[in-house]
Amino acid sequence: MSSQIRNVTLKATGEGTAIMQLSWQYNTANATKEPSFKIRYDIDEGTVENILSLNVYISYLKEGASGMTVMEVTLPSGYVADLEALDDVKKSGAKRVETKNENTVIVVYFDELTEEEKSLKILANRKVKLADLKPVPIKVYDYYDTTKSATVFYTPKQLSTCDICEGDDCGKSCKPGN
Image 1 (cartoon, one colour):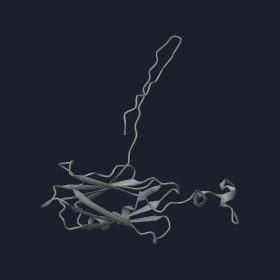
Image 2 (cartoon, rainbow, N blue to C red):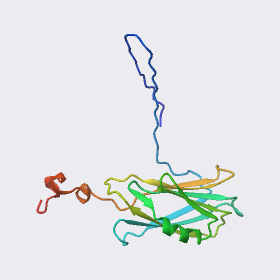
Image 3 (cartoon, rainbow, N blue to C red):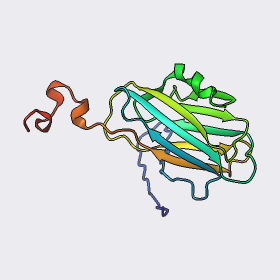
């Protein structure tokens, strides 16, 4: 992305004290160009409504074994981790499993990864119905050498605005027969 210069002009009159602060941040969805880990996933679309069932498969692409490795699975907007299902994630060979950002990111720690693929099942509950969900990342990285990493993005089954509107909030296009 090319750098763009932005100008901000502030004009004030009168007496007193003023404080101004400007912050600008953006996120880009970029997969890792030369990954050190292989990440595959599939989403079980046939499961219960309002449950996200995400199967994640990870392995190390370099020779030997990685150091301590961390996997961070960001959940789509409107979803939170199924905390009871995290015990099953730990049974898949993880050293530790935790959540952050109000249970919207699942963090899994491994002593090491090898070329042998590990399989993890992540479950999340939809708390809010949202349409037009954006892709979210699955990141895997070596805890002590973050240059060894991989990132992929996934998007769950999309809802339309007709799926989330109620009563008079729905437009004519959502009414039966249109």
